[in-house]
Each structure stands twice: as structure tokens, then as C-alpha cells.
Image (cartoon, rainbow, N blue to C red):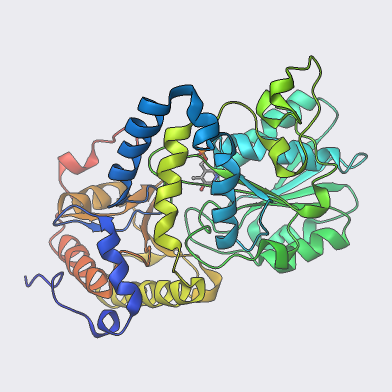
Length: 410
Ligand SMILES: *Cc1c(COP(=O)(O)O)cnc(C)c1O
């Protein structure tokens, strides 16, 4: 079979974003379609991180908190993410994990809607979001209920008992995308607040938190933002809530004056009150450096390339791989930056693909998932990946015992 991965596709030749691939360190022989799980290493990050380690930690020691302004790094990184998600400066802070951030903003949102008891979410949400809501519900022990409906039933389930609508914009399995502006509007009409998870949106498509009127949001640093494994996540607090929103993880870094060492907690002004403990400076520095890649990226152009890549993949797979059933919406506007297919032996199929250098992932029970991060995936990659996928299916190469041994992480 001819290897097409080195041929230049006309759609790549015409697109200035194709040049961004050089900003990443990708292993030879790999077509990486899993940036929605772990973004690749931006080439300049190791050197930048080594500088933070040697020059800042090594030489400045404790002085670096002031001399290199480590103390405000969560807000500086937050401001850079804010630009990518349509938020004003001072409304986003980086830190903690998506799960922990969700806990904080959900608690703050529920406290702003006393007398209402329902957290409304959907079956397309990522389990950790639902788990955190269950944990908070049980901890509060004030009669809250987590109501989980089908994604298409969300709008109809809004009512006078709903305190918070808690959704992930892009479904991690299928890529189905909610209409953030419309659902936020509907939530507000019903008197509820809207909390959005942007884990599969930030860095993948244009997001307009302010324009949509979102109340709170959270998102992930290690997926499309390429911040590295376990990178700090981020959270957003709408300006109108910043004076009143209070979260329960009342750590000293969210205090109005951490170095006054008062015995009583007083929340800091603005989104800083959502901070908890000492920020992980090395991880934040890696995320900060990784965000450089986005500095000159127009998110509308990024979205256009994402749709072009996803549509090329979808149409080629549907034409050449009849055993796969599309799990994603057919309409590109109704999807994020991924395309998923159902296949009964999806786990084995994905293992076979990975062995041939096409890295996507598998989500139970039967979904093979392919993410198309437009900054480093090319149209040539898409065609080369489909060649390999079609060959594996035609030859049933996936049907080998070694592909059926489940690893801990899928
Ligand atoms: C990836 C993802 C998370 C991950 O949360 P962590 O706390 O970083 O493990 C949370 N929510 C959604 C919707 C995700 O896709």
C-alpha cells in the first residue's frame, strides 16, 4: 500500500495554518488523532521549562514568587486562556483540575440560587462532572437533586426548580455540540444559572463565554491547549457574579490577603477567590509556554480547518469502511473537532491502529474516537490514516488476541 503521509494535499498547501505543525514535536511515523485526550509537546516548551527550573527555581529560590511574579501566574495564564474562550481579562484563573474547578463553581452557582434544588445535566456529560455534582449534593445535604436527561431533552427539562444547568459543550464520545448561547438563554429565562465545561472546546473551536452569557465555566489544560499531562485546568466567573460568588474550598490563595495570615477567611476580589492553594508553578509554566502557539491563531480559521479535516475523514471513512457506523453528528456545525464511529470490536480496532502509528482512542462500549487538532493534523494525515484504517478492516488485522488485552488506560 502506498504511504500518503508525506504527500502534500492541496488543502494543506493552501492553508497558512499548515505551518503550525512545525511548532510541535511529534514522533516520526505517528499520525496523532488524540490531542483531545493529551495534546502533544510544543517544541519550545522543554527549553522554557528548563529555564524556569534552572534560572527561576534554581537561582531565585523563594524570591521568584515576587521576582518572577509566580504568585500571579494563575491569573496571567488565565488571561491568555480568556482570549481563546471569549472571556474578558480578569475572569479566568488557571489551576487545579477540571474536576476540582467544577466542584468550586457548581457550589458557588448553587449558593446563588437558594430555594432551588435541581442540578440539571445530561447523559452526554463526562462522568467526572456528574460524580463531582453527586459528591457536592451529598456533602451539602440540603435536598439537592442531580437530574440527568438526554442531551436533546435539556431545554425542555428546565423549570422553576432548576438551580443550575451544568453541561459540557462538546460530548467527549460523539463530539455532539450543544448550542451554548441558546441553552444559556433558556436557563436564564427559567431563572437558572449555566455552568459550562469547555474540556473539548477550549483551543478546538471558537468559544464566546461572554457573548453567550455563561455564568461559570471550567476547562482542561492538557487537551487542545497542549499544557502537558495533568496540566492545570481553568475556570471562568462572569463579571456580574464576581462580587457574590463564594466557593467552599476556602484556601489561603483565594484569600483577600494571603500574607496577612488572618485567622478568618475573606474571599479575594474577582476570580482570584476561586483559587485554593499554592499553584503548581512548573506545570503552569509549561501551560503558559504552550499557549504561545495560539498567539497568532485566528480561531475562526482554526475552526474552518477543523471542519475541513473532520469532513474529509468522515466522508472517506463512510466511503471506504462500511463496517463503521458514524457516532458523531453529520452536520459539522453540530460537532466539535472530533469524529467518532461505532464498531463492536472498537477496542481491538484502536489497538491495531495504534500499532500502525494512527493514534486515536477508544471509549466504552464501542466508540473509536478521532480528534483533529487543526494546528498539527493535516489533510494528508487524514488520508493516510484512512488508508491504514481501511486496510486493517479489510484484512481483519484487528482480530488478533494481542489487540484484545485491555490496558488500564483506554
Ligand atoms: C477531560 C475532561 C475532564 C477531566 O477532568 P480532570 O479533572 O482533568 O481529570 C473533565 N470534564 C470533561 C468534560 C472532560 O472532557
